[in-house]
Image (cartoon, rainbow, N blue to C red; front, top):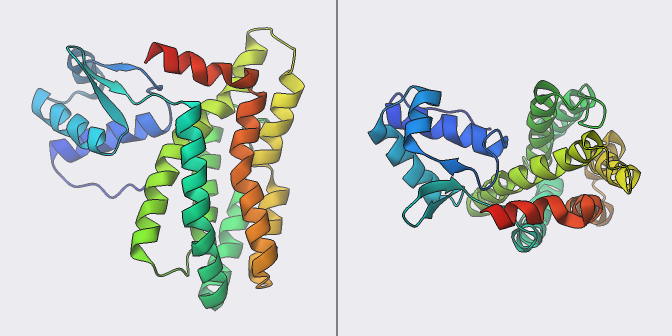
Length: 250
């Protein structure tokens, strides 16, 4: 998460709530009652209300009639829309980086890949610490891939899409683990296989190598496949039942 914070209580409330929403510590559909939030974050009414209004503008929070606020739900429609949007925005940024990137871009990309390679995936270590570490390094790798792009608007759109997708990825990534914990074995192997492929290092390595080789055609194909993995994990996570369950409770 980008962690540049201001010094006001409203900024503090905003970044704390945003962090917990993106990490799904505050899960999709969760009620955001001011009284409970005050106890949890030790912040006043006004900073929390202002932070929630700001998060609503970012579509991370929704206002519920006569019930205050709730974490924005996830849905198959939203997920498919985000995947399409990411394809439209991120592929051109990657191609521009391949065309424009110099030595500094190459070095940053190799460094980001190395740091990602040192992380355990959720399939190997589902602890919150490991998941947070992988999530941070994974975002840094994709940011490095497009680091030589210059379109400020496309980069801004990409950051917004990335934040929204992160909630879906975190929720979907936990679904196979939750399924196994509940003792439901049918399809679990397929779900875990899809998750490992989506998070695995091999595809990220291939992406890096294609970019460094300035092979734009191969890099585009790999990026399109990589973005599509999100829907593969959804398809194998109880046929999307976990996501639909959250939709129903929102």
